[in-house]
Image 1 (tube, rainbow, N blue to C red):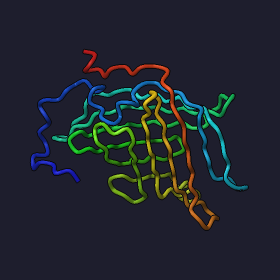
Image 2 (cartoon, helix red, strand yellow):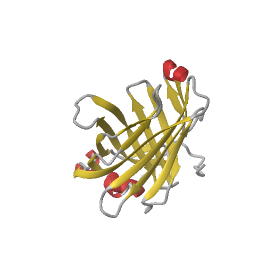
Image 3 (cartoon, helix red, strand yellow):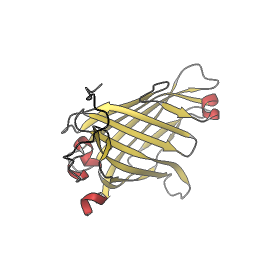
Length: 210
């Protein structure tokens, strides 16, 4: 845990309002992206199902956020996924990627419209191009919260995501969500991966534009 000061109320006075130049390891993810070099492996009654998908994700910078002395820079994101050639939503997700420069902390928040939220936590150096975050069932700081049916049938005990920002301007992720599926004796690893290519630049945060 970072050594925060005794004064938990006073905010920093020298905040750089230009989020895009203060994102640290998240800098290579800002913008609008698409990707179809993908694979989702999810649990079904007949066994694991492998599914390719087409993803669009928008990550836009937000104004700097202060919790007293803590200062966070971040990206608000929306992920929308369909199966190849289809219109119906296969997966939808919103949240924030956050970077705390003073402590080297990374946070991903996520919410999906099946009644589940999570907050994953990790650490990285400013110039890192690869990093990993995790959320764990029962944690007070990087936990997972699910609706009653998911708790009953597909209990999520861990979520991990590894991000790699590539030299060619793309970035990639690998996700591993560990589930306890009702009726199965062993944990199931629901995995997803994709490579994203930029199709549009980010819009500077409001304070930077002003």
